[in-house]
Length: 167
Image 1 (cartoon, one colour):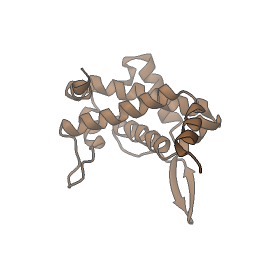
Image 2 (image 1 turned 120 degrees about the vertical axis):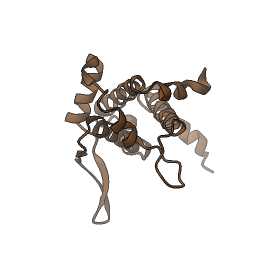
Image 3 (image 1 turned 90 degrees about the vertical axis):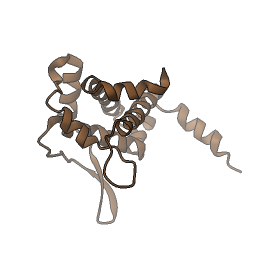
Image 4 (image 1 turned 180 degrees about the horizontal axis):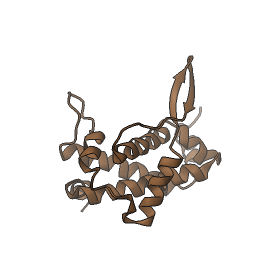
């Protein structure tokens, strides 16, 4: 009988940068929690954070030039965006797809969400596990964190809610 927990632990030990992966998931999920509790949710019955409304409301204040690290992060996401997983002709594939929103923060946060989706749904996990292009995956996670942390400066209420149960 296969012990799935043992096999899973074996896979986990092979993950490159596990602390980075965990931090990215943690910050992303807490950020969504904070958005929801600060009233940034989409209309309807499902509790879905309204990232685009948040980004539109704070786009003018978003200043990638405020730090070298943030500038690098935004430029990397804009120049080397995560690919989008799609189904074409009944098969999974990935393709380049740049959001065409006018607001820069909306575009950038859509790309950060795409990186999260790729990681969560397994596409980026393969690279972090097998070493297939892991530097790109690592940069997407590190720079994604930089962008998310910069968003705290735009909305102190969101930042307060992010840390609310952790203090």
